Image (cartoon, rainbow, N blue to C red; front, side, top):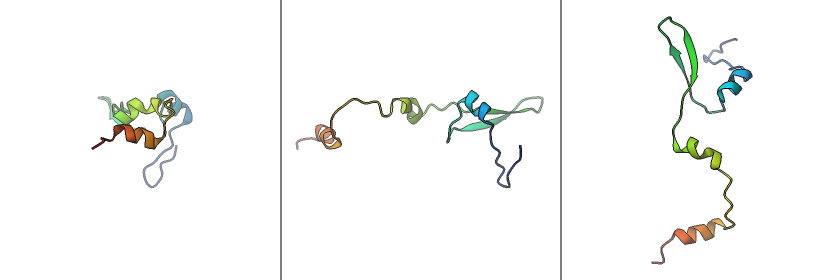
Length: 75
């Protein structure tokens, strides 16, 4: 593997698949007591990640305007 002038390397596809690393996935490098360095996928508990698998599966047949009208007060 070659390191670019920006310090970047390409993670091999088989490793990305194994760790389920997608674009914008955060990873970190961990050093153990023997000096070995490990690439670890960060666990992300943000709301975006927790609900991302639900995105696009809603079955509501309302327009955005109809939904917004339900949330607005009549005042």
